Structure formats: structure tokens, C-alpha cells
Length: 177
Image (cartoon, rainbow, N blue to C red; front, side, top):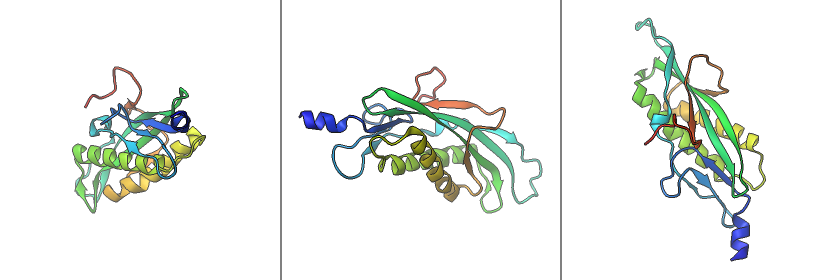
């Protein structure tokens, strides 16, 4: 029993939203192999703001919306934590897809964020640095999101006038499911 408790200490947890089963998106390793990752981020977390309007509907593509996300990363039972900050930007309209509704953008952003988090955290190693996991998540997330929305970007939070939305961080402004 002590070996099991000891094996669980020091493994990674990423709290991106409310837990489906345990209270957040988490990653733990009970033994050799892949880490189980449980939880979901909801489309409501992606409170996109239009930062470039789509002024010419005759153009093949146009407009831009973005949001800044602050996701808390916890290190197992140690109490160590940090925040992974990233901006998600998507076009309002593309030549291939036409108009991209807010709901479509939110759903794609949430589903691909969950998929990228699972991909990265399932392979996380005990003692891996927070900054490495955050960068790996962003590098994995962008191409996944681009499969859903051409031209989408995942970057550092830099666009002025967009909302910063927390998840896994206890504040009044975090969206409720």
C-alpha cells in the first residue's frame, strides 16, 4: 500500500476544467505505461472576442476572433502549481469552410484542447518541468485545431482587448458548465 501511495506522488495533474469523475482534468501514473487523463474543458471557456471584423463578405476569407486562456497545472500531491497561458485565434470566415460560427469555433477549440492535453499528459514523466509541458501542449494543440479550422493559431497571449479566461483556477469569472 505504501508503494502505491509513493508511486502516485510526483505525477502530473492539469486542471483545465471541472472533472467528469474526480474534479478536473488530471494525469496520474499508477505504474508503467500511459497516464490516464480524465476530464474535459467546455466550449464555454472559449469566450472569443472579434478583434478584426469581416468587412468584405466578397473576399475569400476574413475577420479574426481570439481569447486568452490561463490553465492551471498542478504537480501531483506536492502542491506545486503554475499557469499555462495561451491565446487561441480563429478566422471568422475561410475560403474552404465559409463562415465559421462562434459555436463552431468554441466547439473545435474545446475538443482539440482536450485532445491535445490528453496526448501530452498521457506521456508526461515525473519531474518534467511545467514550462516543457505547457510548450508541448501548445505545439500539439495548434496543428490539431488547424485540422478543424484552417488558419487557427495557438500562441502567447498578446492580442489587446481579448478576454482572459481561467480554467482550473478558482475565481468567480471561470465559466460554469
